Image (cartoon, rainbow, N blue to C red; front, side):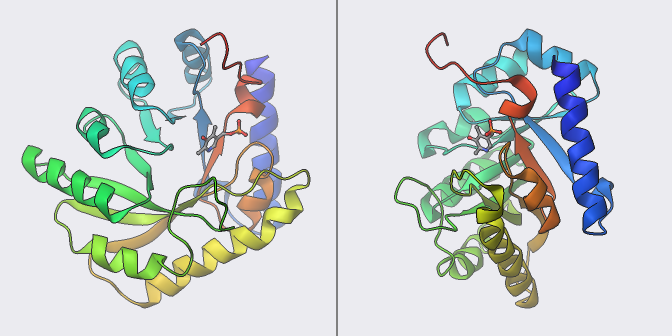
Length: 231
Ligand SMILES: *Cc1c(COP(=O)(O)O)cnc(C)c1O
């Protein structure tokens, strides 16, 4: 099942890249393994995937210890400041920097340990009440402020688009995020690159690729539905 699912996702990724004239090498698939057991993750790893996404600190830390160490773990969920210390040396990329307070804590912890931490800035592109992230209007100022903190490096933007029945409805939001990265790049802010755009999930990753995603975060289409009750 996992093999077929993964093959289908890879075929769809490839087709989306071809449709918009991009190279598939520009797009990295993150297999979102939250709530899924290590045995399933190992199976997907054995099929060649090295990038996995988790949204909870404790779960990422547990899995980190039990799985191969060449996995790149992406933290994609809201991060509380008091948990930064547990994750900072385990996450390859923190996608979900959604406040200045969090950025300051990451910076402080990185300085303390003498490491550099790469992050993406989360944008609440549709202005949804229920979602974390800076509004599109705030993001440039936020990037400017965070860029001045030591040992934290902004590498791009991330968004969680609305849950929609038809993926086309999210195209406008993906276009908006891409445009924001272009705007920010043009400002030439020190220590800031916009190399990565993390957007697109099971329901809309093809449209996200067409509009410039470099990381797509796909859970259900690889691992199947999540059952939160038996966790
Ligand atoms: C769960 C999750 C995903 C994956 O969602 P699917 O619809 O299962 O592909 C992607 N991004 C974030 C931030 C998530 O929490």
